[in-house]
Length: 176
Image (cartoon, rainbow, N blue to C red; front, side, top):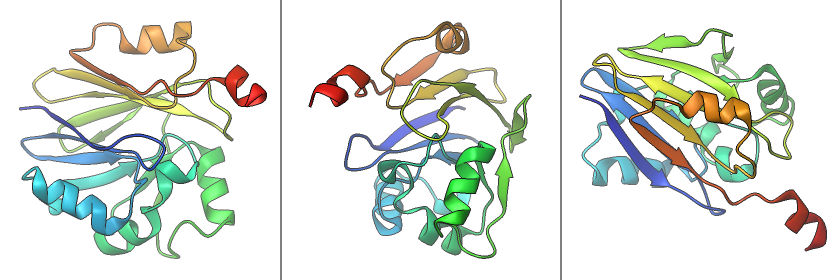
């Protein structure tokens, strides 16, 4: 059974749980670890079910609780090499963190298969994620999306569920 649950969304913090009957992952950790654990508990999700954390990009509203979370859960964090370098240089990762670049073809975590796709955003590197559950349900998440590029369109094609947060507009930022 596939589970897709928004824990926080917006400029104050982003985090989503994607899971199945045998565990799950977090996409982003943009709120405090305490708030993340409370959000999971309020939805009946055991924090021990989290097998990894996937980061879309390095902005604070996506990584705020990451360092403490990784200390408490001791799970790997996946992101692009550029984002992992940014996090390491700026001390956003605990010393013993298992930081893993997203493999080109994707990766299996429990019975989820997760792959990344490029998104347009003003960050060192921004991606969205597609997850396919053991029962074949396909889900995608893309945050801070300003433009639906052909890459994004292809990634979400055929999904059973898509979460798009579209609050990024480069032109508005430049004019504001």
